[in-house]
Amino acid sequence: MSDASARAGAVLTIDLGAVIANWWTLLARLGRGTRAAAVVKADAYGLGAAHIAPALADAGCARFCVATIDEGIALRAVLSRAEILVFSGPHAGTESDFAGHRLIPTLNSPEQIERWKKAARKANQFFAAAIHVDTGLSRLGLSPAELEVFAADREAQAAIDVVLLMSHLVIGEQPEHPLNRAQLDRFAAARRLLPGVPGSLAASSGIFLGADWQADWVRPGASLYGANPTPARPNPMAQVINLQGKIVQVRDIDAGDTVGYGATWRAPGPTRLAVVAAGYADGLPRSLSNKGGAFLGETRVPLVGRVSMDLMVFDVGALPEGAAREGGFVTLIGAGNTVDEVGAAAGTNGYEILTSLGARYHRVWTGVAGTEA
Image 1: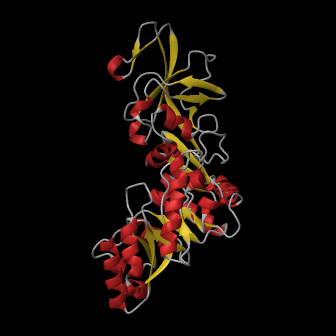
Image 2: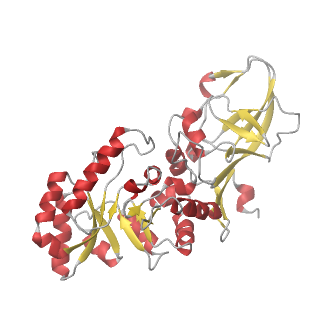
Image 3: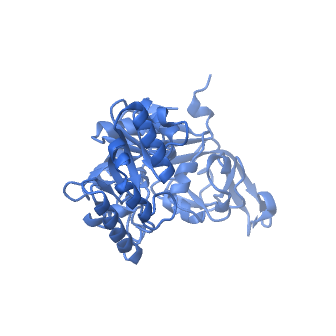
């Protein structure tokens, strides 16, 4: 029987060594006394938290962040000792799950504070939590007025061990934007209400704004996985993923022939096509149609026609005959075609590309303790 790599239409290689190198690159940017918590939500941005989180823990990371309680429970199964912070707070009825799995909730609303306070009193324990204050993103978090109420609530202070006061930057990837300074000032005002509580404002891009924004803790996510946290400058992060799509057919077409659904691309002359077994069901968006590209060896080949559910087509007519062959591979995402570049071509960002990478790929983790799935 053939192995999984032979059966797969595409192979996604994840370099754990590059993830660790990015971790150290980010730590080197931190001011004295600032620590980092790795964000491994959405299954480590689609790359496999069960592989990536233990590698980061071995590199010294002691605190991890996830988005949901189920992500936290899954992570606890592979990390027995690390702190795990859940960005969403306790929904009604989940308080015992947080406590039982030693997860730290982020309290985003007065209702969540009240539930966590009651759970702590019922258990006769001092329950840890992070407090989220909104400084301008207008998503989750307490308003400044609600934070004042919490700070004055003696019952809450007696029940809740606030281990972190956090907020989130709106536009940290643009260093000159005035909202960055405005948010820093709002966060400083919030911190004065909870003196002595460690603070966290910066995620990946915010780290590069400087020590003032880094506070006590930073929360890098996409930058760990190779996305550029400084879009206006060269990417300081190492490339983490390499996605290769298998060529399942090579065919010649004549001038005037159309390619793909909707006949959105017409060959200007005779050419050769490579049909690749990957599509939007694998997280390569339909918006790449007639815009994206891949690499065959060192040569970029354009994507022609619409991306379909399972297939993409590339014009390889400029290459020597035989360069594209059935069973060969093109590089869909890699050093010459990064997640940020693919995201830009698709009208989105590298974050969305990473987290959309599908389940049909044969996955290989290399660089620390290589495994396959």
